[in-house]
Image 1 (tube, helix red, strand yellow):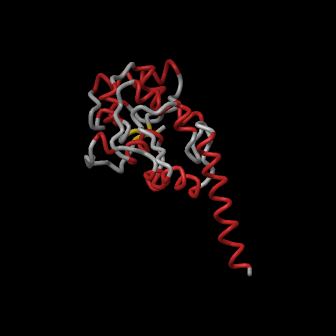
Image 2: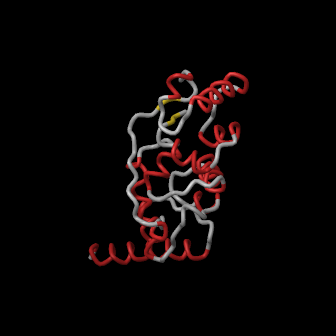
Image 3: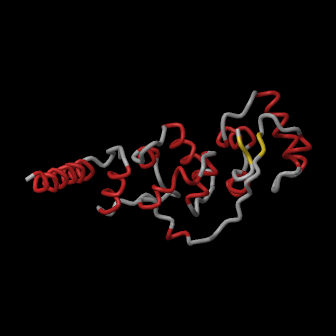
Length: 180
């Protein structure tokens, strides 16, 4: 008797989730189950064109993270894989793994990026240490330290980009090597 009620209850719950997702384009997905249902409904997010509202639909995303990703994208950073987004947010790629079902990277290709596991903290690093980071020349290392001394610590990679007016291509390379 209970086994007959369980599928009905489960199906009823899934139907409520589907209705909620379909009726509210800004519905914030609350769980991995809701994420899977959204993916089954054909909802996809293109990380390179996503709005703050798109990012906020995903479970666990803060407004700060959503804004940072949108600003990076507007600055010219291209996200080719989940590891790019993880690097931009300074989080483990494993933490974002479940989002693969809804994020659509296919248009941009399946390129594998060589990712360095060693990151340097821009808020504590010396000019010499920064100059050893790939893609950072001595003049940029000096600018990073000078801006930190005059303007205080960097909050995140978006703050670094704003204060140093870095091109998106440069930022896309640096985000793998820097932490805040």
